[in-house]
Length: 65
Image 1 (cartoon, rainbow, N blue to C red):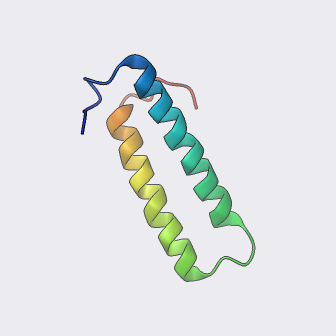
Image 2: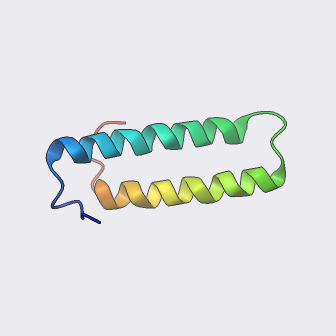
């Protein structure tokens, strides 16, 4: 896999925006009524994975949310 230094700027921005949207959707699903504890645990794990990927791509948080 390409690391964040070798990705073109546009590709990095596109990936960061995708990951942020995905994280928003996960958080929205987490807050819905009727979500079981097991589903919440899976959503929490996926959110943590997305957050780690965002930190690798954008360690300084230089792109606006």
